[in-house]
Length: 253
Length: 281
Image (cartoon, rainbow over all chains, first blue to last red; front, side, top):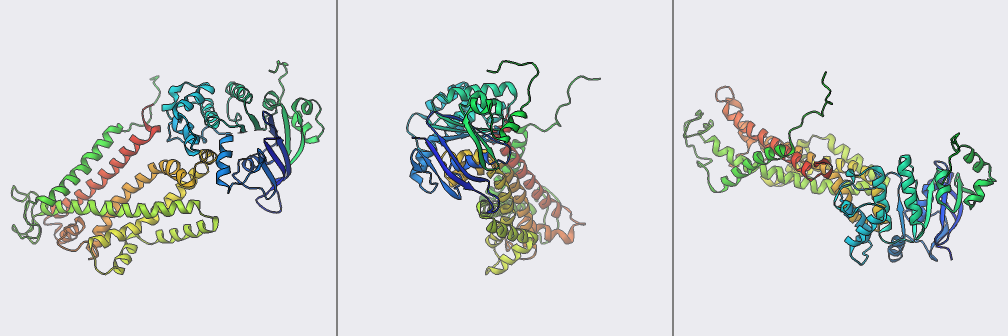
């Protein structure tokens, strides 16, 4: 059974121009999916629907077999524990007035999870490659890449089964980006990952499956290797053609 | 040519600002408290000659009725503190609540609230306060405080609304929602701490405004009735003799200014000391 089942979901802020048009998508446990599309193609909107921050105009979303209903408090508490998100801008995603400990512990406290929160935060920090003494410091004392690691620590601390990453490496410089992608790849071994990006190179490195979104419609989906080797939809072909290439053909890892 | 990099404009050390504020405000608080238990003279008694200059007997002289000015100044400290704290507390309680509600309200309700606040702010603070005082039965210190608090709340509400809206679009608010935090909790732990620095500076400014506005209300007979010797009343009474006995106006004026500066410094210092991003890196 799939972990997330999106069935013919449509959404729009105005009736005339839908942001999402009959989108269907399955995420299996342990899957890594890259959701690719231009700005305005509906990627972030789909993510908001998947997080229960908005409800679709039509169509259904099921999580682990149950309908995703933001009004069902008991279900949402279970759901929030299992589905977490990392945002694009590491400078906007951490409250500047809270210590790193408070930031990472917030899901534990708000979802009333049992256990030794201090130990869980330390463990999460370690998992993202930061030392436990980071917990007492404030976000402004960290670089962009470190902040993104902290945001990832907050997302993984309740032990989610689904991690949604919204352009999570787009704001980072190249070397930092590679490290955070490596971190996400490591984490994806133990959870499903939906990686939203316009960076097809990163998706190719990270995701087993790829879904191409254009103007609110899924135009192509399949194994990343297959789709990229043999793109059928004109939009996918254009997208691939627009990837900048180095003249020196470096080995991609 | 020097090779050193130009440093940022010099700003007095944080601790200095905080201490200067603490000392100035502390002086007024101490004087105000002392006036409850001890006064040099009977405040309403004609204890000296009219319009005496400073002497060892009357430290800053007497007014045109022969009352001791220093005694009145001490009572004025107490009244100014009560008015300032009371008005700002009422203004903050109403204003912050309204502002947060407006920030969360639907677009229609938010627009209506914003327009109402703009209209309220367009009226002079003093005029609103006069209306509120006129609506209450008798002019007293408390009616003046409530009136000023209500008048100030519109400004606080508008500021809170704008600041809260700016915080609401941040990703850490969305992250708090996906972390399962309820809206009241998000207001308490994310929104209020992030808008507090700007709000607190505004409260300090309004403290000064409230004290001055109370003086104006007293002048119009709508503030604290005699024998409450507020600084505003002292200023008003010294108006006629400002050329012959200027100290009668200068003393309450300086007291007013020193308290207003003290509160502003204190607010600045406190803000800096609780703001993690302004602490030593």
